[in-house]
Amino acid sequence: MNQATSSTRAKLTAPRSAAVAGILFSLLLIASLLLIRSSVPEDPYDAGQWLASGWRNVTLGMHLMPFAGIAFLWFIGVVRDRLGEYEDRFFATVFLGSGLLFLAMTFASAAVSGGILSMYGTTPDQLIESGVYTFGRTVTYEITNVYTLKMAGVFMTTTCTLGLRTGIMPRWMAFFGLGLALFLLLSMGFFYWAPLVFPLWTLLISTYFLLTNLKPAQGAPTPSAIDKTQ
Figure 1 (tube, rainbow, N blue to C red):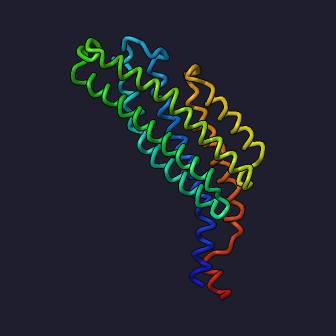
Figure 2 (figure 1 turned 180 degrees about the vertical axis):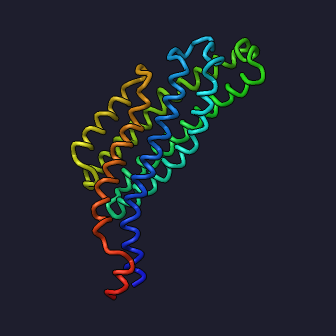
Figure 3 (figure 1 turned 90 degrees about the vertical axis):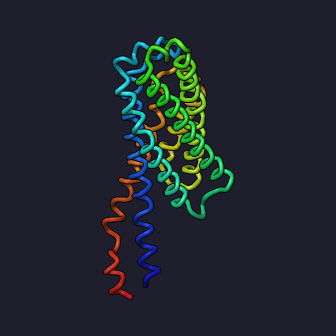
């Protein structure tokens, strides 16, 4: 009786948890990117004039990053749990590795940016004159627009491939995700708003997961009903 109840609860909770975590990650990362990229100019070799007026928005965006990362870790874990016995070892390794590398580089970029903002708050003139700003700005640009985007593309590719093989998402959604992944892999940092593609795609599939699991959840027997039938 207890095993049946636990099994039913797991089936009802895991897909919803993946959907909620994915939606939360998407919204937090989108908000963070909008705050940062609307304040920071596209040119990585700018002189730093934006710091005087835009540092507050960027700081707020940096503070949202850790919470987005926590939600993304939860999303990865619950998606793997949903795949269960259908998870392929090769794709599971690439899926997990690319997801963790994406998260690590996102945090590294945020840490460098946070260091620049902290130094600007204490010694704004020395930050620009010493060349620390130029170095930190270019490093952040390279990490975010080259390496992080590549790992996001690999993560999307493996997720969509697993979706095609296991049927956890519609085929059109999987092929659409593969097209977006190819765009990220080949973008090479030429499109300033390209990082928004990944959270928007995650929001799409997470919303699908949530909607497709609401109907079964509503019609499923409650634990008390299961107890009465035992």
